[in-house]
Amino acid sequence: MECNDSSLYTGITNDLEKRIIAHNSGKGAKYTKSRLPVKLIYKESYKTKSDSLKREFEIKKLKRTEKLKLIN
Image (cartoon, rainbow, N blue to C red; front, side, top):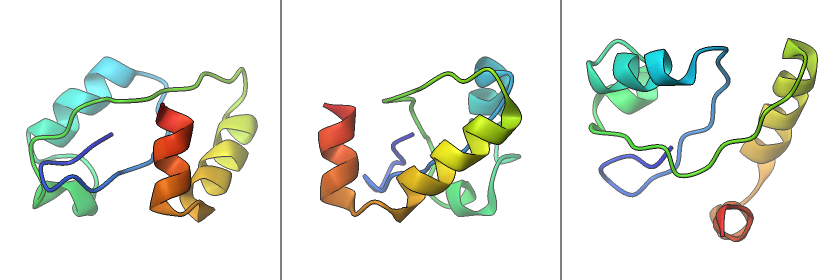
């Protein structure tokens, strides 16, 4: 997701719509609470939580420029 300050947030969920609503109502991650609103700019889907967590970790290790390349 992209935050109001143009920073990027990465996370996992099994209910994307509910998660975005939670973030934008201030009930999401601590990081996003002071950077509202957030908007979805990229998503990937995986069959297992384990696979999702592995990919989340990979994405979080990327530099901002690498994340932007992935998004585009």
